[in-house]
Image (cartoon, rainbow over all chains, first blue to last red; front, side, top):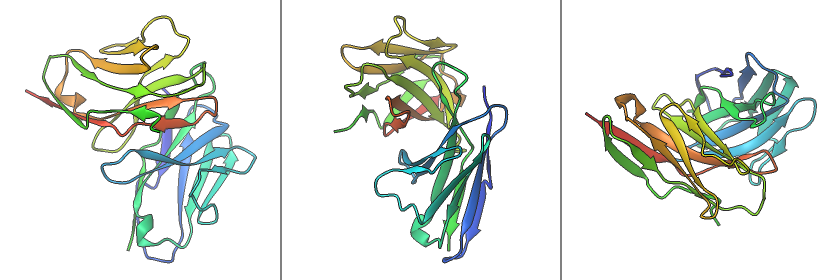
Length: 117
Length: 113
């Protein structure tokens, strides 16, 4: 299967600071990556679709100025949480769509646990 | 309306037994894909199995099989010969034409000896 890495795995930051999370597809190129947020004991909620070379598409209710997404290359997408607040504390997971296969399954990174103090 | 419904918040199964995790979906797109993912306590999402809406046969991947009943809009996951390592959250998801995955609320499976 395809491998997606995510860095950092855990981060603690102070309220008001910004945090950048990286998502990389290691052995395949991904023109499309996705960013999800997951609260404890809940399902994954799609935040935005990241497209290489173009602007991200945000889901309703997600502040694009707060969650900046940059898909700089075919293997890298970044999510920056700007001016983080305690309510932004969550588990953030990225995925990359494997366009090599007909079914185009999404492979997920291991996730980043963000704690804002 | 919920697009993906998983009605079992938790399930228990004894080791070596089979278990079925339920999933129903709602879509008007003729072309869609159904996925099952496993999420252990570490948090990673592990792809298990895929079923395309036009696939004639039920998908199988090792101990995992998908009981696809298109008319009923159900895509239940069957795990045969359960192992202790199968204990995890299981999510059903659907992909429509937009390419986005919509997840169900998940089922926590616990396998006991």
